[in-house]
Amino acid sequence: GESVGLHLPTLSVQEGDNSIINCAYSNSASDYFIWYKQESGKGPQFIIDIRSNMDKRQGQRVTVLLNKTVKHLSLQIAATQPGDSAVYFCAEIVTYSSASKIIFGSGTRLSIRP
Amino acid sequence: DGGITQSPKYLFRKEGQNVTLSCEQNLNHDAMYWYRQDPGQGLRLIYYSQIVNDFQKGDIAEGYSVSREKKESFPLTVTSAQKNPTAFYLCASTQWTENTEAFFGQGTRLTVV
Image (cartoon, rainbow over all chains, first blue to last red; front, side, top):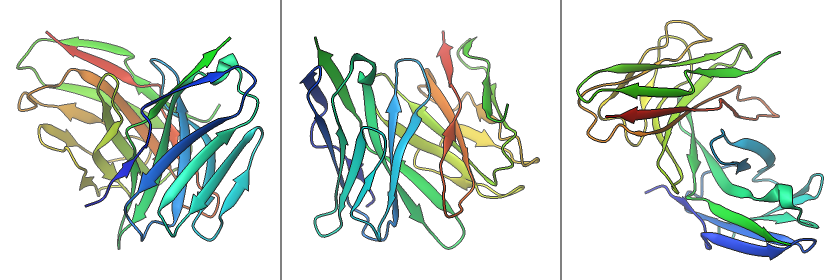
């Protein structure tokens, strides 16, 4: 079946260090992936996306890496700040003949140590 | 401002009653989605719609119903058949183009007492 999961449910990082959040997916037909950040009581916010024809994409302080061979996705956050504390989800877009589904992983909670 | 709006933010209902959650978007997006999130959990897909007057069941559609009579609106009804309706409900919309991004509403927290 389809599934998108995360290796680590929680991650504690020292402020100023880099954070790496990992994600595994199972649908080899997926061609698009998104990372979302969700703060408590709010809806998910788009962080960065990547298409399957790429293996790396950079944004402001964030980098997403895609390894299609092992079906692995990671989000790197540089110089982690207190405001980065949240739950991070990877999402996989699966396209069928008439529709596209957004399938989410279970999430990783990122906490920042001062 | 363009965006996606869910209302109300908090909703309380008695057990056995149907309740409808609102989701409206003015982004001119074709696709809309409903997700359920339980505490400390990820998002599970309830229903989704790619175009007006068409929708498909997601992974946990039992006990829920939707309609898509207008492009900008995708209401979700939580029926009495849903055994554990208390949860955080999130609506999303997107337009599947080259630079796609799914936008989420701020959610409705439903509590059934």
